[in-house]
Image (cartoon, rainbow, N blue to C red; front, side, top):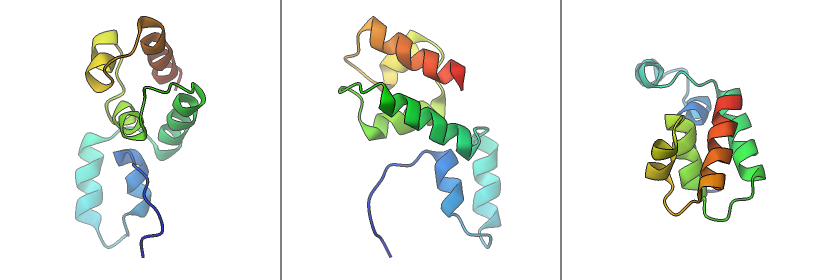
Length: 95
């Protein structure tokens, strides 16, 4: 039953895949190295930055791609200034 709607990173979605779906889990492992705990930490820290220009869906993509340059962040989130981009990069590097 659906109780709510929340954008999830691939790392966070792993938690909701049942054990019978081994094929799906092995597929996800090919693309995601981020642990669920790390993904949740990055989400919390990005949310704590309180940047109004970043939507939940963009936070998910930051977690999925783990951008390390200003250009990579700009491709995910347009309209950010240099300071905001550097804050995002710092959070990603920290985790």
